[in-house]
Image 1 (cartoon, rainbow, N blue to C red):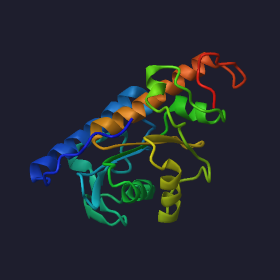
Image 2: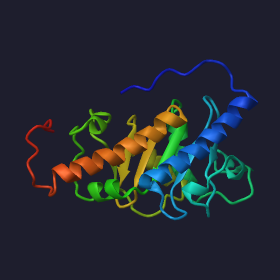
Image 3: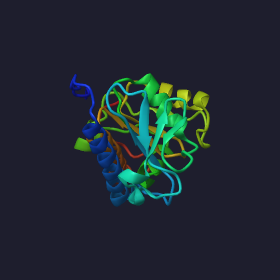
Image 4: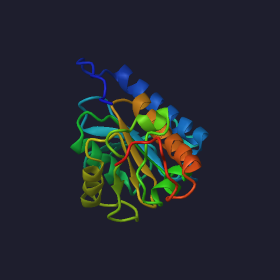
Length: 216
């Protein structure tokens, strides 16, 4: 499913305030839908054309995100505004933003069904409307490492694995989901988790035959 076109107008200060509010709401929605993981997981957003982005601060849960405790970083990880050190995994966000000019929201969370599903080594199928959102192509898997993504080199490897897709599994390390705006990217993360849950119900073991799903 292609991203919708962006408006061509330049962002205003009002747009930035709205962006920060929407980003905080995204974090809290993801937490309400079971994607919170103590203080882990992070979401970032920018306005179209920006070379910087707002990001959830470390040491806070997704449910604690507020517009006034977000951090502003440039694409090299330099803190431009805020009162905490950035998450160690800021390179995930910076590298994806650099590689994908059309992307304005990046989600990295550790949702349980997505983690369980990706560990099985089978592809996600369009067994539901949610699964169809990602098909075709298959949801890619980043499996070069399962540790924290702390360097731009590692972040660039994540971005390469994601390619032009809307989401991917990070083996034993959650998901990355993206969108052209906060709403679209948040929906990508939520739909991926539900699609994984449905396939785990329909395919209780990797060897279960899925008779009505496309082969690949």
